[in-house]
Image (tube, rainbow, N blue to C red; front, side, top):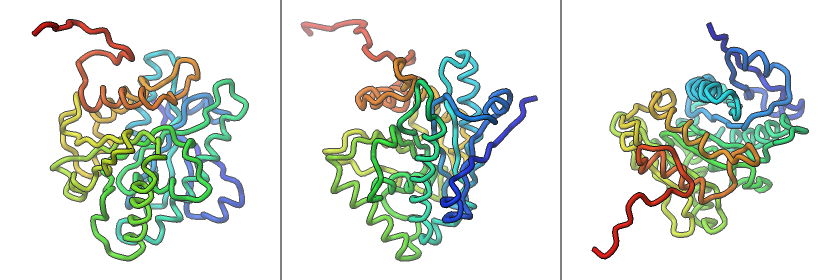
Length: 304
């Protein structure tokens, strides 16, 4: 029997006072959960952001798969999965909390990186997985005045309505969308954040696939948009909630994460070309073999 554990991360008093309804957790199970009751941490940080009425416990599926993969390689590398508790706020129905959530996530990233202080391979950035509105909150981080873009090394969004709100019920939501999308369009040349958007496909009645596609900008070449039913080795459409626990999709995501690790830094690579080629390999083309950075040409057809 594996014991599940979620360690609540202690936030600075000022921060806890400013955001009394929000919390930050570290996911763990088995011996990993026991060992990580004591900080500092030694892995690669990944932050999960839930969506409208979402739960921080939804990190369990991907966190558990990542832990088993790490066990398979005797913890040569491992990921530390953090999750934000937004207290189940209905941000798709009332947009007044979106800005507050964004600012809290910024503080969480800084808090997470401090947990690795003094480690030989301490990370300087985190990867983010955002479900539904959580993915939009992640993109909104770049609009904050004092936010440093290099705090995020990778962004994966699942069933996130990037283009427009599903229901534009108030001006807070519409203004928030306008701010985020305008920023990404106007600053496309300066945004070097590798971003992958995964749609649930025809089973997702809440967020249709057309809303999940990232704006394809000529300057921003590091953005990919896919539908789960077209992802190799997944081949399945998911409804709006089950996208966070669809095993085939989470396995694909974790395989990509492990292929993104830089052997020298023991963290996710900073090379944008490698990031894109890994995501292309796992989410778009997948030639039924392990990822190779410089694949050899099997047959060179010339003179045809």
